[in-house]
Length: 432
Image (tube, rainbow, N blue to C red; front, top):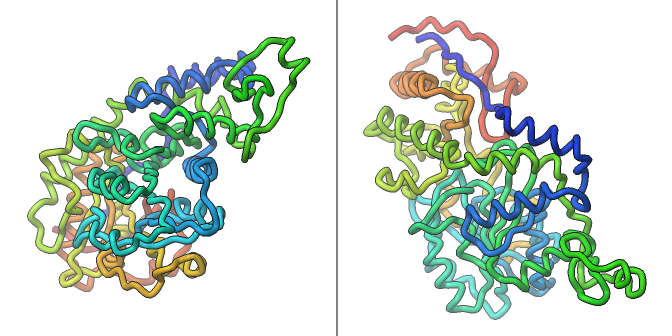
C-alpha cells in the first residue's frame, strides 16, 4: 500500500471571522479597556454553556491559577489531581505553594477511581481538579457528590472538552469553576485564549478583580475594567486594589474571531462526530484495538471529540511500533508524549503520595494512541487513515519497510502538540 497524503492540522478562518478581526483593528479595539469584543464573547460563552457568568483570560493555565488564588489556596492545602493530565494543569497548583495528591482511574478508562480518591482525602484536602481529555466525558457527577460530601471545592479543567455534555449538562458547569482553553488545537479555536465560567457571583467578581491587578473603584469596590462610575467618583475617590491580582487581561484581537466562531461551534462539533462515527464503523472489532471505555457510541451526540482515543492491548501490540508504522504510512497519530504526573521528575517534589503505583493510569498512558478529527480532514481523508491504519495492524508482525526503525533518529518534521506526521516521501514496496 502506498503512503497516504492528508492535510496536517491548521486553522481555517471563515470570511465572517476574518471580517470580525478586521473590524476589531479598524475600531482600535486593542485592549479590554475599549470596545466590546471581550464582553460580547463572554456573554455568548455564558449563554452557550448555560452558566451565569464567564470571564475571558489569556489561557486555561492562567484561568486555573486565577481561580485557585481567588479561592484562597495556601501552602498547607492539598489538591487532588488525576495522574494523567498535562503539566499546564499542575503548575498553577505548585506555583501556589500547595501540595498534590494523585489519583488513579478505573481499568482501561479515564473515569476516576472514586474509592482511591476517598483514601487520599484528609482535613487538608481543599480542592479537586478534574481534568477532561480529548473531549471524553468524566464520571463528573460522582466526583461532584464526593466533593460535596467532604467539603472539597471542585474545579474543572475543560481545556480539551469544550462542548462535551454529561446528562445534558456541559462539562465545566458541575464544579465551582470551569476553566477553558481556546488555543489552535482545541475545539473552540481562536489561536490562543482561555476563560472561566461559574454560577457563583462572588467568585466571578473575585476573578474579575484578579485579572486586572485587583484594581477596583474605591467607592464601589467594583472592577475598574468591567464596571463603570462617574467622573466625580473617580476624581474624588479614585482607585484602590482589592486583594490579590495580576495582569491577566485578554487580547480582544484573539477573541474577535471567537465572537463569530462560537455561533457556529455546534456545526464544527457535529462534523467531528461524523468523522468519529466513521472511525468506529471502520475500526471496530479489530483484535487488540479498543476504544477508551469512556466512549459509548450510543452517546456520541454528547461528545465534542478532539480525537479517536484507542487503547492498545499490550498483549498484542507495542505502542511505539504501531506509531512507527503509522507515521511511515502518512497517518497523523498522537500519543501521551508526557509521562504520568507521579513520574514527572519535577512534580515529585510536590506529590504527597509519590510512592503509590497507580497502575491503571500508567497503563492508559503507555498504550494509548490517537487518530485525528480536525477540520482540515475530509471524510475521504478519514477513510484513507482507516485503510492505512488497518494495513499497519495487519502487517504488524512482518518485517516490512513501514517498521524501519531508522525513522526514530530523524528530526521531527511535524508535531502540533497532539499529532506526529512524517512529511518526507517514503517508498513502500509492500502491496495489498
